[in-house]
Image 1 (cartoon, helix red, strand yellow):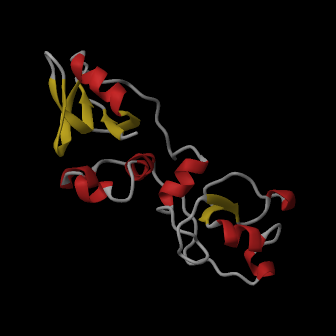
Image 2 (cartoon, one colour):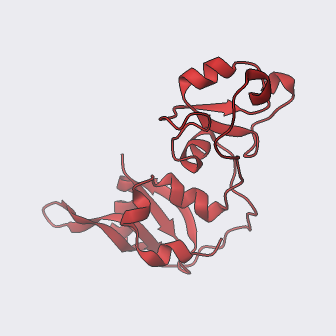
Amino acid sequence: MRETLVLNASFEPLATVSLRRAVVLVMQDKAVVEHAHPGLRIRAASVDVPVPRVIRLSRYVRVPFRRQASWSRRGVLARDQHRCAYCGKRAMTVDHVLPRSHGGGDTWLNTVASCAEDNHRKADRTPEQAGMRLLRRPFVPTPADALVSALGVSARDELPEWLGALPA
């Protein structure tokens, strides 16, 4: 299912929603399409709407300040672009740099995307104990970065240039 980025009326990223939810918001005049998939449209008897990639709410929604994005398995995979932090192959699992059994937790700085082979090979050890090297260090994404990366790796090329300059 396609994901659609939802912007506040002030162009701040708020969330990602399903394509169905995005179309409902547009049809109810609660949002406008800011960026659509080129050449794709949703058509019905009385409806002809472009397939939205980014929508903007018509009214401003006040949101509490978030200093950092909340951690999730899906967020770690999106942050690391579904690439293994140990070998660079396609990653489908999340690995704890410091294993949970050794006191490591589910945090942005302790988790990386990993392929199943490397995750199994590392097992219940630190990378140093397993003789493995991280290709890139884990980092904490901003809430805006987390939302944009949740749209997918190829989405960055499809989104307008101004979206890259959004406030964090």
